[in-house]
Length: 255
Image (tube, rainbow, N blue to C red; front, top):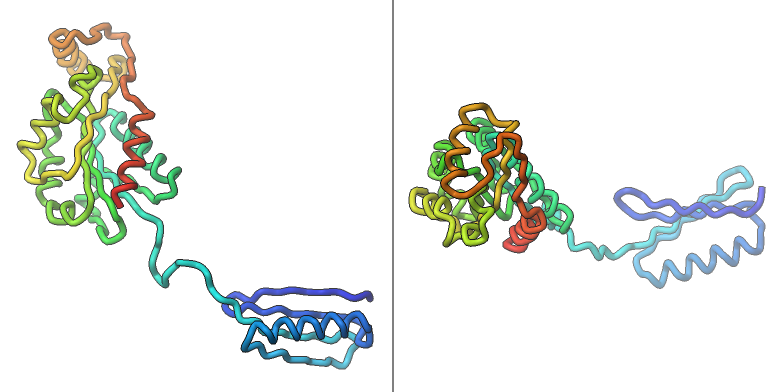
């Protein structure tokens, strides 16, 4: 058996084990002496030699390691964002998911939670640094559970950096894609018991084939009044996904 070196790091206390053979090798003695000298200079090392009955001798050299990590016990340094949402046909859920993906890609931690789940299952607010709430505009207003949720959790929302975003097809027009120019955003800010610190308007999607007939009729009427598409075969995604990702990065920066 030739000379061999085994370096092993313990889970709790780093340990270097040097296993050498044969016992009388001059190279081994030189190497071991060098290791002991270096480890001694590192401070507080306790070299221990154990000579078993066989030809193989094992040396344990305890070398203190200074921790350079900034991690604190029980503290996650990664900033986290929780996105609450309501989604009627799935598009707002996709917006929320894209926001979360952008946050994760930027080095943060993000979770999305449907408002209905939050109401019934509860929320551990302490786990998050930033919260956002998103909802689609439905026939000019919002689902009543959105207003109820933000009212019931106003103190928890106000206790963190927060933002509200809405999703509406009317925001396809640039002048209605701003907080000031979007009347549905203004309606929310006026009616809501919770006043978000920031707000964001996101353009939605026209998807006639996916809507039930009564939605088709109602939205066609709205589109006629706003010079939008009325063809029942139309599927048009007006969402600026790069802007949605930028919004996700902005939420992370609030932490």
